[in-house]
Image 1 (cartoon, helix red, strand yellow):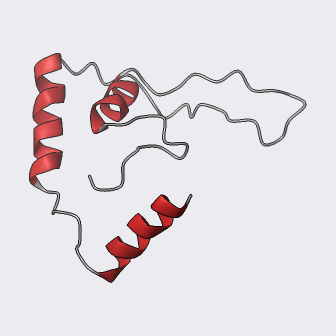
Image 2 (cartoon, helix red, strand yellow):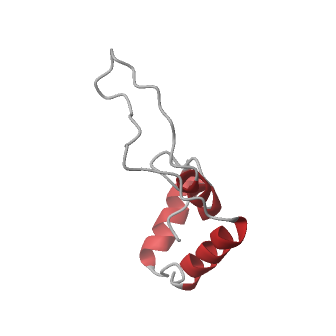
Length: 85
């Protein structure tokens, strides 16, 4: 859980948003017939119908199996790069 923000475009600042969207069956996109790269919702994705309690339990589980961010030279490099922008 150290790679937030979540999704390819960083739309979710927390894992709770990801759980909510998958619980709802994913994003619904209207495919643009003029754009071959237009996103399309997979038919495999189906609503999970998790309760609020189940989503919180799943989030707690994901946090429990996540290690702390690695410390080391790369962390300093990233922070320096962000400060330079």
